[in-house]
Length: 360
Ligand SMILES: N[C@@H](CCC(=O)N[C@@H](CS)C(=O)NCC(=O)O)C(=O)O
Image (cartoon, protein in one colour):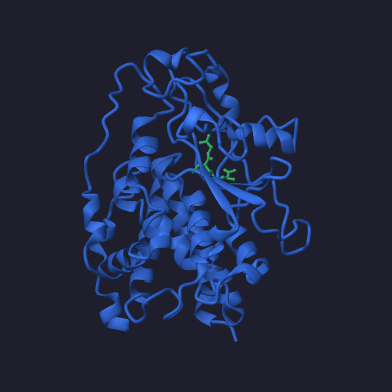
């Protein structure tokens, strides 16, 4: 029996995947050669790989391009064969990294991290400049684009994280950020330790799908849309959606530890990745600033409760968020200083929370 309240909420929401997951607006860009202004990494012995003049090509919306699945048998469920490529700043990629660890699948699925700072002047790709020799040690590639083009030689869009790569072929097989955790929870059960939570329990599946869609539209996408509002009215529309939904979630979390009672499910991950960037990124940079996360007692304690779990806390990296959202700017202007905000104080995430005491 599915939860009628959730289904009813969903009736008023148009679920679409045509919103921009991580919009990039190059439109204000005035300088032809950004190298002088961009404080990004040098790469490949300083060889000029700048493609900044092609930036318009990479700013268009694009949905996930690779959607091969485990659940329909297309992808074999083989341990030690797949590698998740992600960036620690990215909420969509962060979901998958947390999900894999929470399911205990980090024992059989490896992961590689791209640098949130790109080589100066380069757009549309992610690079392994955090690794020795600027090369991913397993895939042996410098940029994620190499794995995208192995999968599709004609691929000329921007490459996005998360991307699941088949290490046998070196090809990206799936970058479907909204469905990957479900794929792992359903198809990899044989490798999920008994102690791991069931992130997509059978009896809750339709409710989890409903709440996921509500959070996707009103929280995950809505903060981006507000931050890139096309007009004052458009900004306000998304801003209102975010805060109405946060109020609603605040109430839901008053009487239960997680979004579905006392068990963690994949929706908790989906909400957490936006909450953990809320005060640092969305509040300050995207003007989603009616209230901060810390002003919501239940949501804030809930977020800290999740952060205290290693799969969440170890995969939350505030430095990468600062780098990607403040140190790099796609709209370089001569007078734009690269000031990286010192606050909010990241250490408050370590403070005690009241959830265990309240809900056991
Ligand atoms: N598949 C989504 C990917 C999720 C996403 O937007 N990831 C961002 C990072 S948060 C990304 O990789 N953007 C590419 C870029 O910034 O060049 C999309 O196609 O838009």
